Structure formats: structure tokens, C-alpha cells
Length: 288
Picture 1 (cartoon, rainbow, N blue to C red):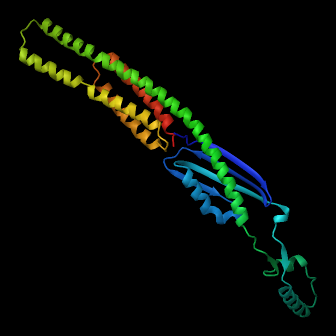
Picture 2 (picture 1 turned 30 degrees about the vertical axis):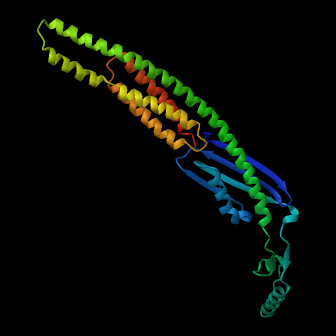
């Protein structure tokens, strides 16, 4: 199923370890480019987060951020290293004895001394597991949004394919009439000259002119590319790059049709084809 690359998803949860929230934004991009922002408590999970994004998203510029607010009971306990504090106090008293005027010791200054306060390193594994589970739900929401937008893109592309098929068939019906009208016009001009013409040379010129105007090959390729677009839209995989290539090929054939046009009708068809192709190209730029 075709997916859009533009989407937004947000999930939040209050857990026993605190408040967690994920936000994922994605826009169109040629490749998959991810930017991840995590709180300090989840830095170790960055590799796992990136792996999940790479496994589930094919293309797009993705901005993924997580917020965490620890619960009151989840804060790490703070303890004082009594032995280090005792040695620090003894040193302070020794220095104070050498001073003419002693300065009162501030408990806050003592607590700031390296090593006096010991903070137990928390076990972040449970927090990582809960955060990654919430990330999976956020990705589910993001992909569902991409798929809904993808359905709209697919429908628009199929509508344009139907319109293009009608234009190509119309051009096929007009070609025999255009060739006949061109032949009759040339013969009428020769008749106005009132001079005999070499039948062999005349036939050669008519054949050359017919070859110059021949767009049957372009019509066949246009029809084949349109069928391939419809086929690609039914694939259950990222197809944005393939569709972008097909848009280039369709535009090439439409331009050739216009350059070989020998009548206003086929020129108009060429212009309408290019308008439809450009509309499709704008949609394809956002397809994963």
C-alpha cells in the first residue's frame, strides 16, 4: 500500500516510573533521515530507537523526540559518604586553626564537595522497556496516518491515469485523420503550382513526412507507462522512487508527442498530458 511521507503522531503515558511522551513528525525526503532527541535517562536506548525507525519507515525526514518526567518515588536516593565527610571536616578545622578569623562552614558547600554525596545509579532498563513500548504505539499511529494519506494519493494518481488513458486513445483515433489531411494538403499545394511532379519523388516525400509525424511508438510507451503506474500503486512496499522515475518517462514521451505534433489537436493533447503528469509528480514527491 502506498504511504504518504507527511504525518504526525503523539503518544503519552503515566507509568509507575513517571510521565513519558513521544512525538514523531515526518515530511518528504529522498531518503530516510532521522533526528532523535532523548532525555538523559534514555540515552542508552538511542540505538534501539533508531533501529525501530529504520525497520518501519522507508523514506522521509523524521523528527523523533521523547520527554520524561520521573515520578516522585522514582528519584534516586541521596546518601552521604560519612568517611569522606569526616576527613573533609578534619581538613577544614585544620585550616581554620591557621586563620586569624574563622569562617563558619556552610553545609551546602560541604555537600557540593566531590565525593561527599553519593547518588545511587538507577536501573534504567525498566524505563527503557516502557519507553520503547510507547514508541511502538506512536509508530503505529504514524504509519496509520501515512497510510490514510497514501490512499488519497493513490486515488488521485489513478484518476490522472484514467484521464491520461483517455487522451492517449483520443490521439490514436486522430492520427489517421491527421495523416490523411496532411497528405491532401500537400497535394493541394502541388496542384496550385500547376507544374508536373515526379510521382516517385512525391511518394518519397510523403513517406518521409509520415515518418517525421509518426508517434505510434510514443503512444505505445505512454500507454505502457500508464499501465505500470497503476500496477505499481497496488504494491505493498515503498514505491515513491519507482513512481518518480515513471513520471520522468511519461513527461519525456509527452514532450516528444508535442514536438512531433502536426495538428492543433495533438498539440492540445500533449499539453493536457503534461499538465496531468505535473499534477501527478507533485503527489509522487510525497509518496514513500
